Length: 200
Ligand code: SF4
Image (cartoon, rainbow, N blue to C red):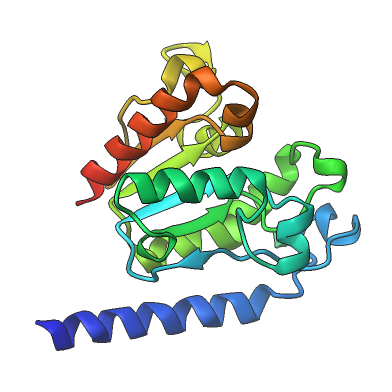
């Protein structure tokens, strides 16, 4: 059983490596030419049952080629640890892998390109049970622009459980929002706990 698990882990690790190598100089959307230094592919357990998807890399993430390492990332890491998860237990990535200039929101064509080329393939390889989306942009990737006929608002849909094929989608706030609105920290923590529990 353990041998089988290791084989799956290695197989997925290699498939992710191959995908990264194929696109590490990706030019498939305008973000390639707008000042990015690196493609921030994502990191974590190739066999994770929980994938956390943010919006896009910031300046620190772009420079270090690692997702969620700035202030927002430190908050995310702290909350994961409080719920008994290490970063290495989950897989952390973003909707777009290249930093949008001045941290603007990624545009529709950038999101569509990057999701098709990388995010959906990462999900196919890792085969998680749960995707926890941070902020409105990744929530829209999985749930569309409207939920219950209303435009997506994170305050309205956070902490709810949605089905998207075989996946469970649990949207929550982006940690950058929590840094500005500490009163939502408890809700953010509960949403991460919910995502963890559904992924077990
Ligand atoms: S954001 Fe994605 S699609 Fe656009 S250049 Fe970067 S890796 Fe390629």
